Image (cartoon, rainbow, N blue to C red; front, top):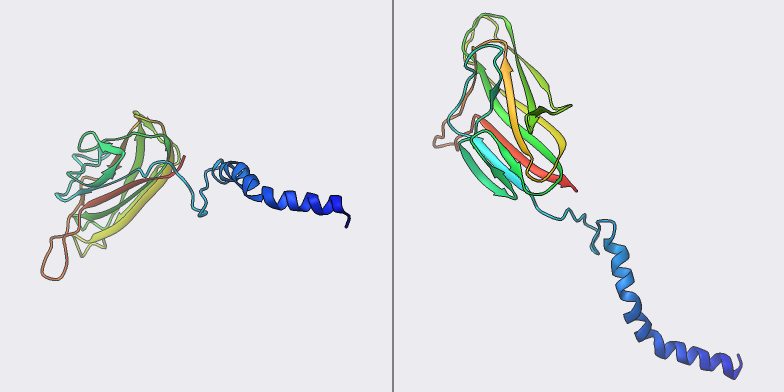
Length: 200
């Protein structure tokens, strides 16, 4: 290698710290521009969530009459607010996952198949792909049997949107029950709701 090539290598070596400082902002931008941070985790912007419970119990007023699920206890929340005992509002837009566990029982033992329908309502509009049907049956010998069920869906919400979870039953015999605490276990709510953001 001639003198010119050696001088160029020496200059390039001396310029490495300067080049590193100049190129660092571009490297950081490329790591974060698509929603990813340097450690590889997904950056969803805001940690939005709420958990709410019904620790009292509830029941339909009549068959085939839409009712709102009610929640008397707001356990934890951040950026999702509970407006009333049955409605929630979102501070930030995004895709949210709604998960609800509930305990339902049938008070009569008439050996008939009863149905429970649940769906979400966003700003007074029924949410597509949010409906679910549950069938509750007693065998004509036992009444008051408890069934543990799960309900969930995901949907996109805008800032200030409201959400309600509604249900109706084909009989007034169904009810949502709590389980009392005792020396062996804590109490179990009749309905337990979780809402959390999963994407921008």
